[in-house]
Image (tube, rainbow, N blue to C red; front, side, top):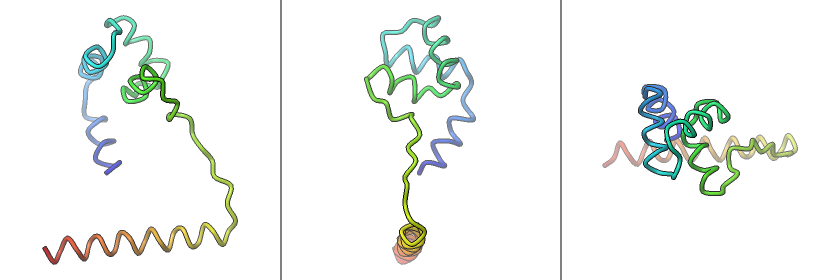
Length: 89
């Protein structure tokens, strides 16, 4: 799902992104351009910042090697099961 959002974001022009920011916030076009530069041209981060969310901060999870192995196994099984269910339907 995140890949689809990223692909769509890459295809959008800067003017389209600024138009989205102006519609979703109280920023004018100049403020939207400044905020886009501050947030590495990511309009989602600009809108989240306006709403008061600090989710654009990268969180590093300290986990042991064993925890990471099991996390990857669970993720792999989950994606495999999702693919199988989608093929059956």
